[in-house]
Amino acid sequence: MHTYISKSEQDTIQFAKNFASNLKKGDIVVLSGELGSGKTKFVQGVLEYFGLENEISSPTFTIVNEYSKQDIHIYHFDVYRLSDIDEFYAMGGEEYFDNGICLIEWGEMIESILPAHYTKITFHKNDENVEYRELIIDKK
Image (cartoon, rainbow, N blue to C red; front, side):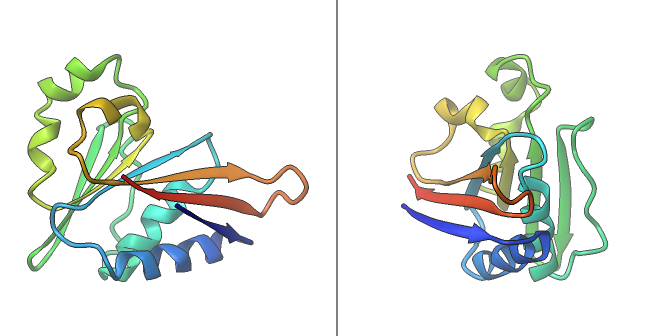
């Protein structure tokens, strides 16, 4: 586990781009943290790394957005609105895990059904500086 201090939205995006350089098919990244803590900015950085920066939109109402470029498939989930894990199963959510890179906002809601290995990034706002975020990266 390690910690990264982001000092701006652009800093979070750059951190995500660097992080994305190590992502590959089958990787799962759980993004946890309160509203406005930087989860979607992180996803934006990952998409920018893969040349998909013009594609991003929040999946809040669709649960998952799919992005593809050549042989890279990225699945951006927002499971905040799911009532329970059964709803994730009903939409076939677990079928995405092996087919691309999965970025799951509010993923702590479905952690009990995730494969054994994934990365969890917890975003914390800073009370003293509204631009700062603490990102705690934990590989499971």
